[in-house]
Length: 86
Image (cartoon, rainbow, N blue to C red; front, side, top):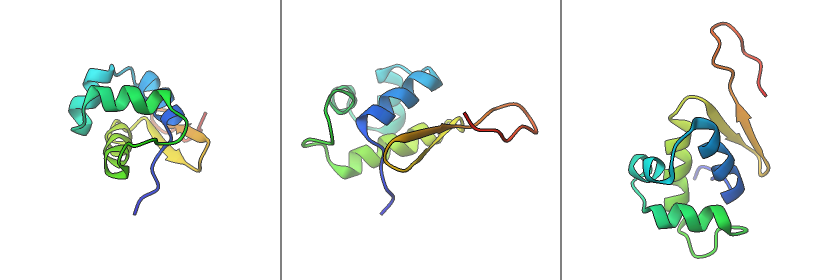
């Protein structure tokens, strides 16, 4: 199974791509309250791994971010021909 992002990573990634909780909720197919809870708690609490995975995949589908490791959100530079990461 794919390693999923933490709530803190999800919150940072959502802010970076400029999506509201509602937009991410619709794209991931999970409730907005699930996203809000995940972003506020340490760890995953009682949120299913499946839901966290759906959220992670939705954010990665933006093409602007990817998740690596436990503490890093890597941001892909969107300039053509520039592969630097921030």
